[in-house]
Image (cartoon, helix red, strand yellow):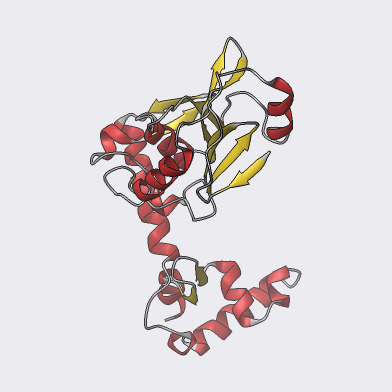
Length: 244
């Protein structure tokens, strides 16, 4: 197996074939069948329209891998490969940043690769599970019609109640854990903070929180948080409400 993401001379085209030994080596750690977190799709020379439903479903469930260029026939995997895997991978990379295709940029630069099995090129896309504050992740312009979740080995369109639940949870999470700009440790009222720690010590001396320094303590109770998107640490909305 070779992994490449630079345009090379394309191998000669071969008929689709079932090669269980090569597939077993490639998918040794993935389970070589469609499942909750693994999906195969035929593609040929174009991106299948149904990939966006699968990306939405993976993001709204537990994440997973989407592999283009393989078909499942009667319980066996058939390698068909892709006619122009590198062009298709670039197209997919561009579309993953198009909000009309998928509402959140959940895949990073290392999540999309072109893999080779024998003379066949495949596209492998790892879709991380989206944080609650980014859900629902949907395709198209309408979350009520474009939100999917993963059930067994299939993508299931969400009903309105489930979309509403994701939206409520996203709002609750983003408010509490939002790292506030232009706020710092100096905005914490030290008297209130010290009083809080003292009360905890008096009421629960065995608590592991008592052994933490102030910043670690704040992180543990949700008052100080890491914003990975902006690559900064800071005071959260919840921390400001309690100790501001």
